[in-house]
Length: 342
Image (cartoon, rainbow, N blue to C red; front, side, top):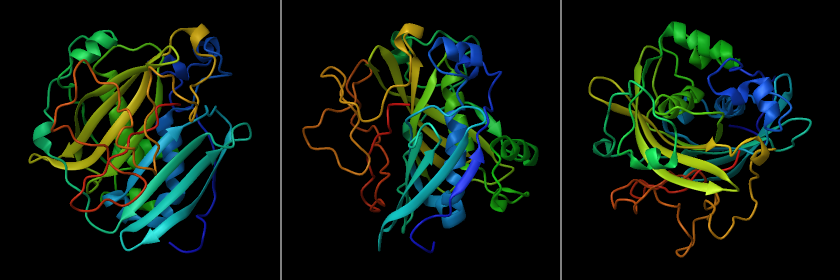
């Protein structure tokens, strides 16, 4: 990584899910919620944000890097997204970078805080993440049902050369390290698996991917099969909308090897068209009964309110959030939650 800034990356945004079951990507449905058209999926926007990041940091970031992505404003089909970024810190522990995706109408449509730690990633305890079959019939996504789940059904997907080619064409990533039989699995594909972990377990109406925190634990290659294990970490509401946060680990291999740890936040109930003229705003002060996530880049104060809990206090062995603003020390698993606004 050389220079003070990353090379700018410009791309014409594509709504890659116009016929998705999630009708927030459908023009007519999105307009009823006050948007001017179907939303470009957050996973796709994240893919755009990673292009200059991976061009600068290479496979090292795919193996052990971290990211916290927040979607502040919608991106629409045909808009030009300009991705810019720069290192914000470098020391013996690693490097920290900040990137922004901007459109003509939204100078901060999405942000990504990334790190490349100097050391190996802190491992996860797979014993805390069970596998389970996906439901034959998906129940409706209600707070009561999500709060009752001890474990989510586990999506399983193979990322072979055909799947890789389809994915790279979908997100338009030009980098060569993803191509060929020894190519790396694209990092946005992990967030696609996180989306699957939500939508394949419950039946949803229009919903919005709000943000994610990702910690790469070795990465994976073309030809590997990914299994996504997880659970519901928290449920909370803000301004009449219902949020869910999933705690997920993606593994590969017959003897499961962790690939990525993800904290994935979504607005699973928008509250009806009259409640959702626009996506919730990042940085708006939380109401007293809806504590905000601690901000990326600053540790929470000891008395800062935690996430609202799912039906009961978190178990003592529940893993903490991965840090996304500073490289983790080998003996101290990081902790920082994702953005909760889209």
